Image (cartoon, one colour):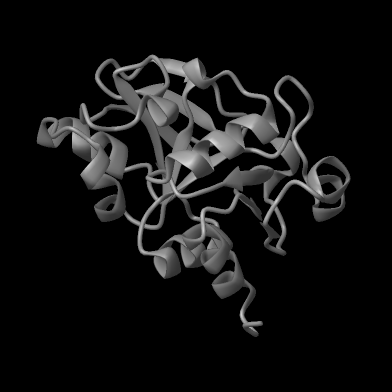
Length: 190
């Protein structure tokens, strides 16, 4: 066993595992977005319709670039001005991004997190991870490790300790090309 819990979480991700971890708003469920078996496992655990798509969370924009189409410098700057932070953008996805990750959409939901645990997790993993709320679809999201354990204890490969921010407040989701708010953030910012 590693002494560093983040290394344990990354080892689980590398082995195709599904983990839980704290985010800006609630605990999230995550996996390697490039491992189809892991994404299918996450969708099954969460009982989520694959058509909806998932969010990728990263420690930097550079980690997200391999999944995203190039857009104008103005649109890129629009997103970068909100990161790192609790803002998710629906960005035109590269064609090769799995439909398990982007769902039926031609966009991909992406965020550069300001949460220190997510930052360290993605930096150590070296790429983005899936980020979806730790709950069964249409149920309240887990805000504490205890709630994660109650809902998923035997189904997850690792639960990374930490504190979720903002006690269940949803992060904002915007469409990049139109700047339309798809889901309002309850965080009182921007």
